[in-house]
Length: 339
Image 1 (cartoon, rainbow, N blue to C red):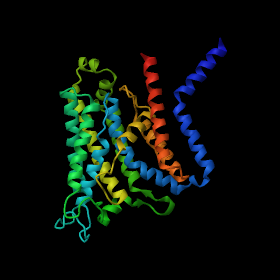
Image 2: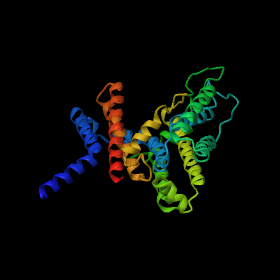
Image 3: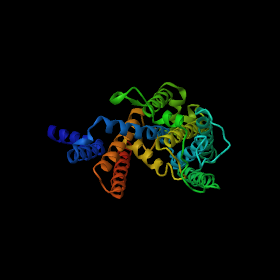
Image 4: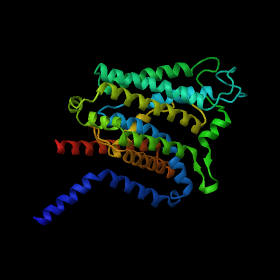
């Protein structure tokens, strides 16, 4: 009897941590193939690339916890990148989208894009909460609308659909710069992501709004009986997500140094996958900020690692897809077991 109990506990542990075990094995393989992967420079690159993804995933995570989903996240990021880049080009750049636009303070275009993206999120929340449209359908429709609008804005004469580059040096430094010097330099992107992470953690764990979000995700009917305004809270959840996408999009434009209408493509799937791998339940009501950060970092390490050892980019999609399916399957198994 005791042996059976131990076997059950061991099997349960492996099932609960299967996705982490697989990812750990992948990481070990990468390190064995290329020991140079373990370097401070690579570590900084991974964290810098993960920073914008963390901000996006925190927006998506709140929606998943409330029993929703957001397929428009990547396209909203792209809209933000294009808008912010078009307003933050150097005044002497030959192919400036707005030739007569004076040099704006960096914060102004960022705030404008955050507000616009926040309004898009608010519309998503309104459609989901008031019209009871399934989040999958509502946000898929918004994804198409935003991509169309971004493409129209991006493909403007006289220069047509060429990348919006020539960004102002102050903006580039604002995103690509760092605090400190040499190997001890901390990229600003990591600092921005850390600030957003702290604020979201406080919002989720120390406010009434955070408690309401988990209540809605755990049992919407019970939340309504308890006096929680589902419509109001969903509006805030989706609007906040849109604002996070807006900030992340502006940072992504600065990180890459340019923007196109395809910036942010598929980012929403990466964010959803990272959230699920990090313990956010697709059934709602379960998820933590540290878990989401862990999920993003795991995916970023795998993505960076596979590219570092020269794995075919198409094969990387296969690996990522298998990880997503496995993570959701394990999550649903836990949910069904609780039922």
